[in-house]
Length: 296
Image (cartoon, rainbow, N blue to C red):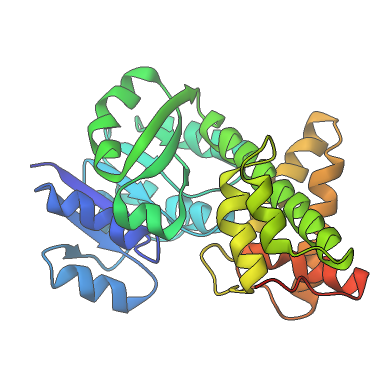
């Protein structure tokens, strides 16, 4: 039985931590929200009062928090991980954050004799609950080998991408594909609908051809049925595309499609819709077209 820590037990982190617990590990947990901590503690987790306490009591600390500033605060802030972590420990950040910042965090931890993996995930709440997440890992190969058995408790497609920051770079690439594909599918179904074709039939036909994709299958259905309750919120997609655009600027390159998708999400946020599912991007295009996708 390993002494593990898990910081951030929200929608994603709670089921992930629970999978680690169910495998017989002792899991020390912390979150700024009390309710999920109490729930997991009732199932055998050890509730802690701070990130520092989690680090003091754990040999491996997993993190799943919303954004780059949250990771920085949890790692380096007052009562943060770095104040309590022991030399020889490992930090595994499974949040989706800036690759550039990740490399800096890894350097600061290395100065304390602590290894770090960045291991962002794809698969959403359903993937977290079913332990079927795709996990993209950056860091030393030897450290990845030590942690892989724990990843296997939380996910299915687990790939070591390269050094520190490369896991986050892969996640950014994933979100570029997701954001721009949602935009393309929204445009296609909106075009079909305004031209008078049944978008549900168009989607059915496209799923049998070269345009087929998991996003067309799942989010195409959401768009047609207008079921925009969140699986992955617009504000989270915006954060990931912001990481992409910031990274592109630092690399001296252009991501025009990414920028357009981000502006459409920005328009929805201006309308107060940032907590809708990211498939609701179609609503911004509908305003421009003065037409709604109307399927069966």
